[in-house]
Image (cartoon, rainbow, N blue to C red; front, side, top):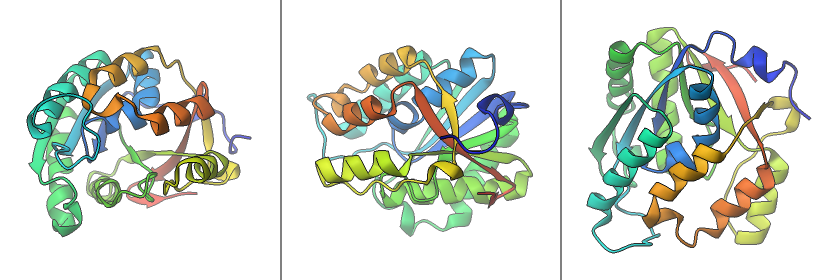
Length: 230
């Protein structure tokens, strides 16, 4: 059951978004359904990614991931209709060592360039539990406080997280249905974007199972000016 408030109400006033993510593929594997819904309704989109994702344990193609994944990111963001995509070079897996104000400053800088009405990020848990996800979201929330704009947070229902953790031994963190607003999505372009990330999508059973469990629905939380309102 979705949280109080229809998905259409949640998207009212979302004329443009800046997605803030940690790794190439986060914009597609995690946020792809939401991005497709937003750009499909005419909202402009930009993406800021902090790392090249070179430390990933998945390696579904030949080549140095630090070089392969930026090209995958560029192709996927184009498929999703992203007008501006920026990839920074912080070492993968070490965002927790970067001063939070430094990460937030990048978000503020790019937001002042592309002027989004909203930021878009992972839930404060990082969804998967990855520390880089947590710190990327913290940067987005801190930047929102400076910019005075709302944040949409992508989250998982607790039941989906529990199923994935039971089946795969993962560390997904979910939310109760009453915390969430359901957003119907069409995943066609998301799947096309996912296919651009050959190094990470090949043999990725967890990704496929998560999208199977979610079906044609994603789930969002709403935060305003750096303060989550759950």
